[in-house]
Length: 191
View 1 (spheres, rainbow, N blue to C red):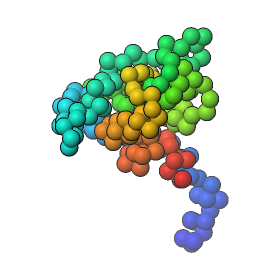
View 2 (cartoon, rainbow, N blue to C red):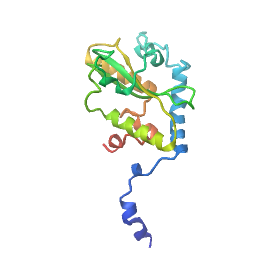
View 3 (cartoon, one colour):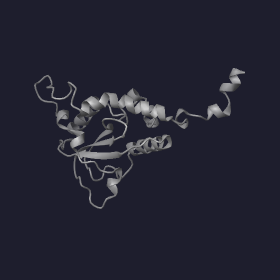
View 4 (cartoon, rainbow, N blue to C red):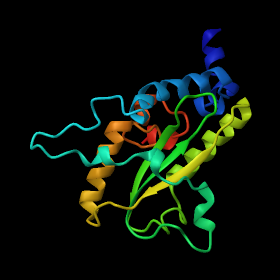
């Protein structure tokens, strides 16, 4: 009998992503992320202001996500982009039930005005995230913020991006999605 139960067509066709998230699961996921990031937003950790082994201040400490202008995720449809050239960009949510925002994704680009016009994995994660929140009746306020005072050299800019990812652990970056058991990035988890 057990063999038949586990081989039923219903179970065979159901993937973990097809199963709906409950509001409690989604809120608990957000809270775990918030527990790590809230001290960073409040500048309460040792990661801020520390010097590296050579006495050089880590450049990630100079980027305050909350000091950057939030833009709607549809900014790329505007006739004139407020940002041009190289940038680090941060995708954030500001759930009203949490004390601090959530930093969901960190990226770097050579062309801030064009980066989101084409295909971008994070766009699909954000769509899944938004849909899950809506289905659970949980409010969200997504935005994107650009920091343009970054190196024009791609290698140096990517190094800065990686420092930020290691500090903030944003759940939609491939380097950290496993840590959060992020249900919105299935194609990263399966690769």
